[in-house]
Amino acid sequence: MSLQVNKLFFNNINVSIWHIDETEDFLISNLDLSINCKKRLKSIQSPSQRKQFLSVRTLMKYNDIDLNDLFYDSNGAPFLKNNLNISISHTNNYSAIALSKNPVGIDIQDYREKILSVRDKFVNEFEIELIDTHSVNDLTILWSIKESIYKIYKKKGLNFKKNIIVQKITKDFKDSLSIVNDMDKKTFFKSKNIIHSNYICSIVKVND
Image (cartoon, rainbow, N blue to C red; front, side, top):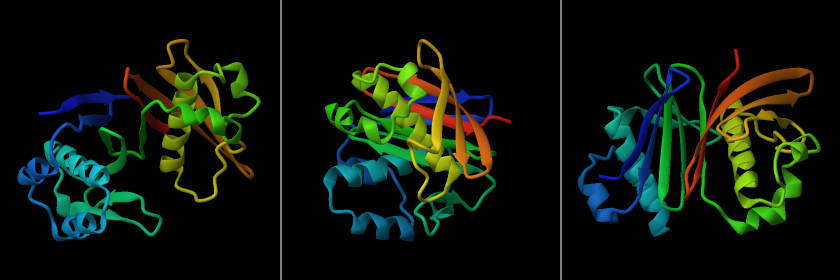
């Protein structure tokens, strides 16, 4: 079993992270896939993406979520037919889900050097004072927070640099406060960040 994290954040968000070290056949053998899941799996060609897909369903099973309750909206965002909100993420050999009665966003990222070449696309003038913009780790944390916020905000075209601003982050990077400036609307968010040697995982909720 490869469950790495199963923990409650903010008292109402359950987060589960799976380390994908199984074969595809093994993952399938432990799942009762719905018709929709089988169709989606059939459309995925990449072996690694197929295992990511299956590991997410494994996490859902672990959390007693019926796979028949999972659907995707016109923008590709997942939702459940029951009263829970769900957010899904995966990267390389890890997958993650967040479940809550309130809106939630989750993102998991591994460390990649190429993030250095795109930092100017998502780091703004305020955040330069918060992180080391030459650090892959720091940039990955910032990106993961913003990606989680993008998922919870659910608006296409939201600009990571101009619209999503991380205002505060603790020295250990485990907590942050952010704001989305969307025309005349301002929305504040809190994040908890899991700092692992192989990945960063950010969990975001509205700061009410």
